[in-house]
Each structure stands twice: as C-alpha cells, then as structure tokens.
Image 1: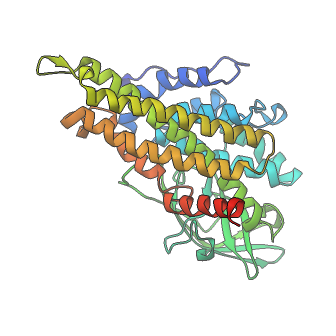
Image 2: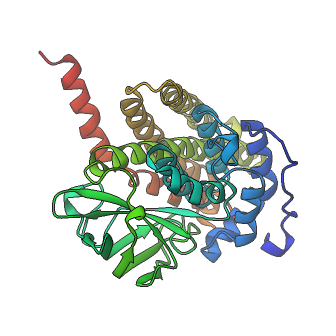
Image 3: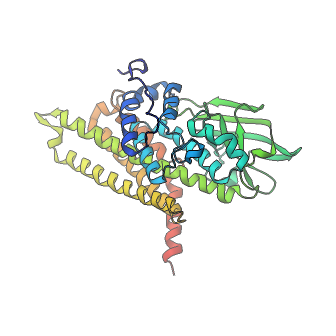
Length: 388
C-alpha cells in the first residue's frame, strides 16, 4: 500500500512555467494520484501538498500577473480542475472554494481589499473558503440563511453557524454570507478573528480529505472593510456569480471523475481474466467503456463551451454552466457505479480507486446546486425561451 512517506517528492514547478492541461496532468500523475487513496483514508490533504500546489501556481492562476497569477483564461482553468479532479476530488474541492473566494475578491473587492489579500491568495500563503450552507438548511435556498450581520460602531457584528465548509479546517480567510435587516451580504472574515470557532466535520461519504468543517461565529467584530461589494448586492450578484464559478469547477472535476473511471476500467479489464478470457473481450464490458468514452467527451465539450462564454463575458455562461454541471455530475455518478461493477468485489475495496471515485461522484450531484435544483432551473430556461 502506498503511504505518504513513500510518495514521490513534491517538486515545485520551475519559475515561469506556463500552466496548461498537460502541466496539470503531469503534476497530478506525479504528486496526487499515487497517494489519493491515502488522503481519503486519513481524511486530510496534507499541508505539504497544499504548499506545493502554491509553488506550482495552481491556487489562483486566473489572477493577473501583477497580483501573482498567470492571467489564465477560464477555459484552461476548467481543464486544470478537470485534471485535478481526475486525480483526487478532495484536492479539487480545495481549489474550488479557494477559487470562489479569490475570484469574488477580484471581481467585487475594493482596491484596499485586493491589495491586502490578493497576492497571498495567489500564492496560497492565505487559503480561502466559501461559507454559505448552514446546519438548519441555509444553502441553495438563501432564504434559509440564519447567520446575521449587524452594523455596529462603524463595522459589523457577526453571529451564526455555517456547516459543510470545504477547506474550513485549514482556511485562513472565509467568504461568509449573512443576513442583515434588509438583505444578504458577503463578508471577508479572517480565521483569527476573536469569536470564530472551527469544528472539524469528519467521516463523510465522499471528498473525505477536503478538510470539511463547521464554523461558529460568536459576536465576531469586523471592521467596515470586511464587506465585499455593496450591502444590497450580495444575494443578487456576488453570491450568484461566485456559485457559478464554483459550479464550473465542480462540472470540470466531474469530467475528471469520468475520465478516471474510464482509465481505471480500461486498465483493469485489459489485465483481468475470467473463464480463460480477458474481461475486455466481453461485449457488455466493451459497451460500458464505450458509454464512458462518449459521455466524457460530451461533458468535456459542455464545460469547454461554458468556459468560452465566461471568457467572453457572455451571460449565457450561467445556463451553459448549469447544463455542464448537471450532465457531468450525473455522468460521473453513473459511470463510477459502472466502474465498481466492472471491478466486481475489488471495486468495493480500498485497494482500488473506483470505490473512492464512486463516493466522490455522489457528492458532485449534491454540491453547488443539487441535481434536482439543476433540473428545475434548466427547465425554467426552456420555458422562458420556447414557451409561447
């Protein structure tokens, strides 16, 4: 069994190396895939790898070069998140929430906020997390948000709880959505603020190494500059825009899961012999792999389209991302089930990655808008466009 102590050394990318799908794939193949199952069993992505992700420039490569990024376009960012998702959905999840906070800061932050936080977010010296879901149900239904922010002495007083916060066990800066008397606002909350309590959430079904936490805010005092964007802006723009980028990352990571299922199943069936024949010779096995090939290509194209629209600033990207995330996440769930079936009893073993892929794929159907909400939203768009 591979252990963290026997994993390949984590070397940083050479200075000036341009991030591409190929460079991300090489990083994943060398530094993540050999130990992804170990992370899963231990329930944590190690700090050493998170630091090397920063050295490779993967935390916020879409930032402009002046802030420490590479001006990476969102099409390529999606490809990077696909490759990371192919290796480990827990690592990809950490990139997702960091991306969400970093992008929101770049899009809606004041010059002072950007100067204070962006360079450290670019390198990963500061890690970010997105805080929306609550124990009592606030999540996709923003009307359920119970965390409150009250203006006080020129700043804010924050009280409430957030749960299922990916990266929350490690993050240094939280993007917290809270309710005021008149609206929902977004606040930048440093982890070290007095009154912030971080409670690990352990033994979850999937993305088990993504450092999930519950957060408690007990009379947390924040300065006025904690507010991200105008006070009446968050629910309509900051939240929807940030969720859209997170949804794009999850869609891309779901493509990575399907690709990983395809690679694992092709390798396994080419080696495994049953009744004197290789599994690859069985027609039903070949049919399953054919469906994986078709769906992974279709899902990849849907993500590409959403990324192209994002780079063009086209508002149609919102619906394109919904469609990509719905298709890719359902494909991941379907083909991870098939991958386990192809592996038989071995598919239920921790010695084979398909068991982890199966559990992680279920998470993709829930996060950043459940499949049920996605279907309602996509149908609403159909009626708006075509119903007379």
